[in-house]
Each structure stands twice: as C-alpha cells, then as structure tokens.
Length: 598
Image (cartoon, rainbow, N blue to C red; front, side, top):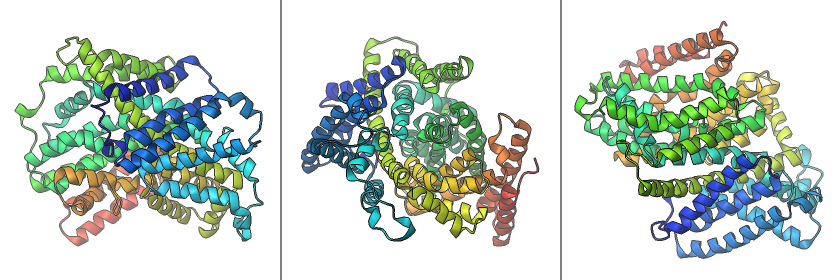
C-alpha cells in the first residue's frame, strides 16, 4: 500500500519539518553522487535512516501506530547510525558479531526492516523475508536436500547487518545510488509544469483522432510513467484528468477505467525508469544501463501499440469521437509546456549518451535543470514564491517515494541474502529444471506462474528480484540469454497490476471511474493482452532485444509480433462471432510465438 494513500499526519500542519526532511534526503543522495565513492556501510544505513521517519511517523493511521512507530523509529535510527559511524571497525569483523550488544543491534535492524516494509506495502513481502530468515537460522533441522549444514547465529546475523550483504547488499546500493536519484528527478518534474506538458503534448498528438481521449491517456501515461515508474501513482495522476474526460465523451465507465489502468501499468516497462527494474537489472546482470533501456524499448512500444489498437477497435465499436477542438490545448501552450520536460530530458539524454556520463550523474544534471524551471510557469513569469512552494512539494514527494522504495528493496535484500548464504536459490533452480524435465516451455510456464502469484502479493520490483534469483539461472541453463531471462521475469511480475484477484491499478481506476472493479478488470485484460503475450514472443524472437547490434532482425521481429498482437486484439475486442474470435485469437498467438526467421 502506498504511503500517499495512508498518511494521516497532515504535512500542512508541519510543513517545515517534513519538507526539511525531504530536502535533507534529496541533498544526501545528490551529495553521494557528486562526492564520488562513499563506503557502502556508511551510505546505505544512512539511506535507511532517512527513510524511517516517513514509514513510521508520516504514515501513521492511528494513535497506536504513532506510539509504536516512534519506538521503531528511535531504535532503527540508533542502529543505523551505529553501523554508519562504526563502518570501518565493523568491516574488519568480516561479518561476525563479537558482543551481545552487536547481536542486539543486528536483531533490531532486521526487525525494523521487516516492520518498515510491512507499514509501507503490507504483510506478504515481510512474511516471505521472515520465512527466509527462519530458514537461514534453522535450516540445519530441515531434512533432506533442502536443508543446509547450519550457520552460526553470530555469522548469519553479522552477514545480514555489518557486511555488504543482506540489508546492505548490492540491491540496496541500487536504491541509494540510482533509484533515489531518478525518484528525485520525477518529483521535481511533477512539481512544476512538466506533468501538464505531458498531458498537453498527448492531447495535441492524439486528441483529434477517433477515440482521442483514450489515446491521449495512452500517450500521457507512457510519458508520465517513464519517470514515475509506478502504476498506482500513474493512475492517480493522469487518471484524474483522463477518466472524467473519457466519461464526458461517452466512454463506458468500465472502458474508461480499463484504458487508464492498462496505460498506466505500462509505465513500469517503459524506459528510462521501468519502476526501478532497469537499475536492478544493471546490478544483477552486469549489463550497462544504456544497453538495458535500448533492449527494453521495442517491447515497451509494442505494449503501448497494442493498447492503442485496442482503443481504436473499441472506438469503432462504441462510435467514440475525437476530443473537440475547443477542448484541445492551443499549439503555443503545447510548445511552452513541453519545454518543461523536454529540457531536463534533453540534458539527461545528452549527458548519458553524448557526454558518456553515468546515468545517476546525468540524472543529477537533469534535476538541476528541472529545479531551475520551477521558477517559471507557462507564461514564463518568474516567481521566487512559486519556486519555494514547488520545491516543498517536490521534497515531500521525493522523501515519501524514496522511503517506500527503500523499504521494499531492503526487505527484498534479506531474501536475496538468505538465498545466497544457504544455497537455497541453487536448490530451487534445480527443482524447477527437474520439474520441467529440462525442457524450456514447461520451465517458462512454471516461472511465469511463480511471477504472477508472487506479483499479486508484493510490488513488481520485489517480485522480480525474488523470482529472477531462483528461476533466472534455470532459464539461462536452458539457453535463454541473461538479459532476456530477466526481462521475461520482470514482465510477468507486472501482470498483477491488471489481473484479478489482486490488481492495484484496476482498483484505483475503478474507484475513479465509479464502476465495479471486475468489469474494469475484464476490459483491462483485453486491452492489456500484450502484457501476457509479449514476454513469450520475446523468448521466441530474441532478436527483439538486440535493436542496438541487430537492428534489421529486431525490426523484423517487431513487425511480426505487432501483426500477431493486432490479430489478438481484433479477436478479443471486435470479433462478434465466437468462431471468429477463436480464429483470430489462435492466429494472433501463433504469429506472436512463432520463432522469427531472422
């Protein structure tokens, strides 16, 4: 559950406190980039320390939560500061806890991390992490091949809390050094005119087309999602404008909600942010960030193209008109507001690909450009007061979002750490291979099922990390290249955003549309059919991810998959006779999963 929907501590009553804390978090993470190398055992505990107030105080919903929140906060802050301030001495212990005091600190850190994740996103992920911890401590009592020889508690807890493993592992490093920076960039952009610029550009590009309001939703959600990386945040932001507009133009309420839910879900597969997935892939695969976003782009475009096709088919079916010219933004306004996101994005892209700077350093430069634009509005008038208000808004949003992502990744790092220490990941991989009979298709289906089930209970990034840790090696042993295996798992982990019974984006969109969520989910699954099929098509035609080095083969695979997705969409949306639906559905699926000849 997002902090933005659960906070009851009114920031209006304490604006300076929370805005100041947000600015402190922004300053800390920017300083890490500009200052160069900082020891992990110093930076990562401080990252957690800055996140804890948002999780334990800002998000309180009752007096009991507030009281217990302060207890957890004080204990957590003390323990994080202890590790950070004693980083050099602790690193010399090589993961072994020397004293009862250090054991108490380690246990407290683990408990605080679990409770922080629970308050941020609910029970499922902390429960999975707690089970892994129990396995790590007691696995020697598990009979058979799934047990382990046993790890002394001092070594196990020490590895989890005073080394660059467990809580402070490489995933937490991604959260500290990359994800937080892009979250800050998104918060600064959204605090200014950039969000309206997305909407205006989308309306100008698609508003005049048949079913224009729905297509505006697709474009605006694709652009907004590229920096927000959160399906729920995307629905809440762009849906507040697009859903009422679609309803006014005669869209059925279920369709209006479904379009926004499906379009917003695509933000987590659209580069550059990909819901933090791109940065985690960098760490787990060793693939450069630029290569990942280029590899992921064709599939993301295919997804939005499929949604676009579905909307066009629905528009024909319901005779949905374009947006009236009077309701579309004037070209001058479009041009001006577009600059508010075009300038920072241009700085980001030039710094990454022109100046060959690291993504995080390039994002810092883009943040500075976006921050300067907070002084201006669409008339180019300058106001210091406007800048202060917008900077405060950006600080609040950045602080909250960094905290939520930190809670998720730190908790997921517990799982990854235990899997690595105990060898359980290798055993699960072997079990998948044995169950699949060393065959690729059954292994893919088992992995997809695991991703869907886990994705229903935990956020996409956490589900992806856990699934790819245990299933990724199995897919690679069956001949799937590493990046492709990671993209396959990541896509299927995203399915829960629109697939019942747990479909967060659908729930939010249904509430905004005033429609039964099951009806919205039914339309969303038809519009979002690409989310189910494109991962399988990528496995069948791996050239689709090789746009950089094999552009002709990637283009041919793109066209083949696009043709299959059109057939699928036509069968699901427009075909009136069951036999016709079946024919187009089978044909479309066959074309998508037929191996590309290139």
